[in-house]
Length: 108
Length: 499
Image (tube, rainbow over all chains, first blue to last red):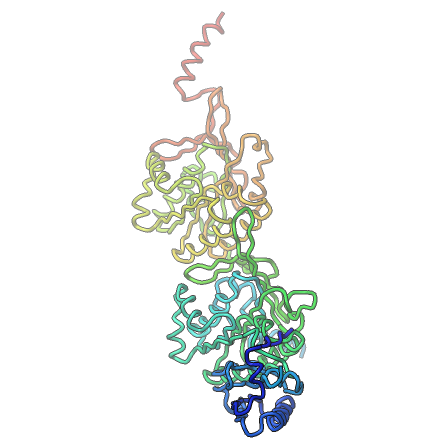
């Protein structure tokens, strides 16, 4: 069973705050169904909630296995929120929008 | 036609990959299934990581097979330090690109599931590692760590996929896991994912810890299915198997002198067979150790190396005592013809004694081994255990073509024709009994050959004399004793008789 990430009340007030820039990395494996879905989902969410203040990098570890080692990737797909700190990881195809928004601290 | 078909069948051989681990290759009749995954299960601290590492290092050093080690628990640098004590220099192998070490960190709290996922990331990393060094061997240690980070149901199906993926990759893999969670439980994964399952165990009985190994399953291959004790020391892992080749041992017709001229005469005039097993049983103080010393002394003179395993007296004490009856053992020890192994039986488990002795045998390659006395070992554990251990040990010695002599102390009460010595006598080739008997009111040491397979032997009970010139056997002459004291006493009695 996965534990939900602890709710960080401190960052709550900042959620959705103007000007806070998001740097996201999505690790996928080629065009496998989970990966394809994840790409669509994250693009959707970014456009809806982070318009104009995000950087999204999509990395295919089939092509860049070294990055998988560097970032200690096991589960795929995985979204890593590099900024704002703290770094967070969201595994899965990102279809549970509610959880994604929580994970990205966009809602509390 | 029939012949042709037959030879085809016998030609089929299950491909195996030698582990190079002492004993394990015997139990598995040639190693682990080649290009397939093997599951190594056990609780914490029972030696999974070391066994897996030894498999990998042996692959590199002996069989020219590069290997990948994926560590889920220890960091790479920790692992390197930990196995240094076994003499493995992983840095060197890594530098030579014959080993690839990677730490796969599993964090439990950082992840939030947002939908479907798999552990393809691990596959990618593993595939990358295998391709990088063209690995033939892979270790995943230990896989169940993943349960701390990911969903149980997903992992179960992913593990299945992992095992078949490893097969496709044509690597011989060891996957370690703790018992519980998914393995060896009611819904055990091991049932269908692995072709070979080995179970390690660390057990404490009578305050003595023994590690044991059992091959639970090995698809398509013969394997020993008992529990085998194993040890981990500075030379790595040694498993102590029943030697399957025992029945194929060569039987020698060559003879070896017992070191006692009169005794050789009783044994078809030539002594023991080479490579046979000899038991000397007797009550306390009847001279069992002296017979063993005579044997060892004469074997050394004939240029045969000897190993004397003493479980009662310390070597120095034996040397001193035997000096007094004319066997000078000290020079033999100095010239390394004779080696002593001395240990108190209670110090460690019986199996461990045998393993230690076996190792010593492999090192010094003796022609003669003496265990004095075997009964001291019997204080440990129930007798059936000891018998099976002894049988295995005797089998091992026979395959090595070593002549072995045991001494066994028996109590006076048990002599009455039922002194089967807890059943040891049935597994030895020659059995001799020494005891105190009364001849004309005189306590006399006697010796008789109870059995000696494959040779004519004397049925006579001989008088057994130990003097400073060694050991002699004389016929027991009733009616006249050589003791002056008895003669004198008899004389004193005479006048009374005349009355």
